[in-house]
Image 1 (cartoon, helix red, strand yellow):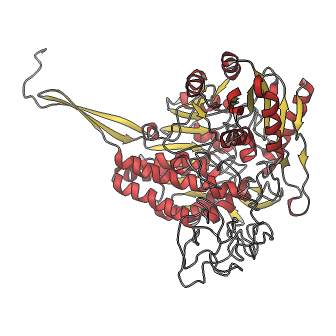
Image 2 (cartoon, one colour):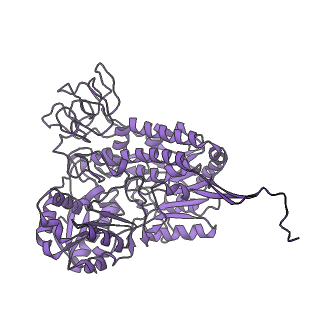
Image 3 (cartoon, helix red, strand yellow):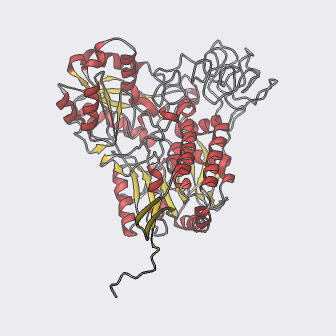
Amino acid sequence: MNRRDDQPEKQPVTPATGDTVPEQRAAGTTAPSGRVPGPRPADAMLASAPPPAPPAPGAPGRPSDASATGRPGTGARDGYGAASAADGSAGYGTATGTGRPGTGTDPDRYGAASDRPGTGGPDGYGTASASGTGRPGAKPNTDGAVVSYESRYDHWIGGEYVPPARGQYFENPSPVDGRPFTEIARGTAEDVEKALDAAHAAAPGWGRTSVAERAGILLKIADRMEAGLEQLAVAETWDNGKPVRETLAADIPLAIDHFRYFAGALRAQEGGLSELDDDTVAYHFHEPLGVVAQIIPWNFPILMATWKLAPALAAGNAVVLKPAEQTPASIHVWLSLVADLLPPGVLNVVNGFGVEAGKPLASSPRVAKIAFTGETTTGRLIMQYASENIKPVTLELGGKSPNIFFDDVSRADDDFLDKALEGFTMFALNQGEVCTCPSRALIQRGHYGEFLEAGIARTEAIVAGHPLDTDTMIGAQASNDQLQKILSYLDIGQQEGAKILTGGQRIEHGGDLAGGYYVQPTVFEGDNRMRVFQEEIFGPVVAVTSFSDFDDAITTANDTLYGLGAGVWTREANTAYRAGRAIQAGRVWTNCYHAYPAHAAFGGYKQSGIGRETHRMMLDHYQQTKNLLVSYSPKKLGFF
């Protein structure tokens, strides 16, 4: 990864160079069974095709006035909109059916009665009719909004909000319009120590809680999140800048599923017993580590917190969590929904900047493990801090993922080709702020021209706009610093001789979006030796080149410092298998991309990290094994 450091536009401090512990993005999202509610079923984080032109979202409404009450997401076929009232007066629920959030008249769609996402007057993102007219959903803290932020957030320590020890706060702007919308406590080492005190007080009792009880609490957390899905989605969009259609369809549903997955994985976990002989037995027990530190990135704030929290809490640990200073607010909206479910001190949140709060947390001898997602250079610092105290780490770091398209992809003009073109365009998902962003597209020469032309057309069809509009496919970059970094790489690429095929400019929205951090999806054409091919840009930028044959594809794919993710697209099973095994990456998507199911291990090779996220093996990452070696024989060994 190139640079995803502390981005100080939110406060007047410039962290010391080389000494920061900034939190960066982490990759990815988890979908139930590897799927996300979307336009139609697909094993992808977003569905295989964008929804058919949904109407612009309207102001959120209240629960149903229909004869049968419903929870968020109810409707004729499980959509947000009303099933029976053209004006949407039935609100969220209708008397005709119930269902889960995010579905509609077609399987897995937001929409409601008219087969258009979010139709219906006061029911959130819908409009007053199926005609498709309306405005973006109401922003937080305005009339009709589904979520309101507090004017100030302190640290969450020991089950209550605690002011910062030094009384300092920093402003938190929304990437949507660049304007501050809340203040966040600016934590220091003193605040970290308070949080560790609370965590250590709570850890023994929480670790002795039965697995059934802990699993039950995780399930309740998931239920609360599902009931507040729309609230969390809007909060995440406003804090991070990503389109609400992604937070509704991916980020929050995947976080919900992650808690449910680890509730089940914990109940299914068993210890071990080995009978060494008739009189000697080895017992193996899983025990929690105790108090663990978690440093969360800014690209998926709630989801990445969930990736770490769910297994840590399931395993019986107490947690001190530090959100990214770029996106510190949405986790507090999440806390407002679920915090009462956990005993005081089991989860503690200390806000602040890397050098001031992250470093004291990562270097503390009072933590039993450090989990970090961010850039590779900061990961090295985390390892250094942990090594001073002989503490284990999990590091999910940078990537420069190759996305390989073999000639046979274009053998027919069919659904598979359409799916592959969407796979090409996945570099723009989440504004490219994904550690596994498919930022290097390798296209075999036999179909290079026609496939690239179609890929450019698909890229140019991406809709930029208001992040709270469900039509919008690409929103704002997470911070002004990140925007400036992306713009600098657009210049670097051209100076190196790379050719911009589409995009390449900042988007200057007016009106409510003036001052926001927007950039066009950009396709470069060049050579794998260029910096835009080798360095992580962390924006909606893909660098394209060609390859001649299988060996050339693998050589180019592996010519990188990183090894987090990769994509392989081919109709030939033998090619798919051999390429997947030959690529040096921890996750190789085959004929798909950006799917993050909870039960598939995720992590990197080379300089992309240590350890894994997701999958039941994460329980092992947050536990230690106790062996009782027991002799039942009354006889001595006979040595003395």
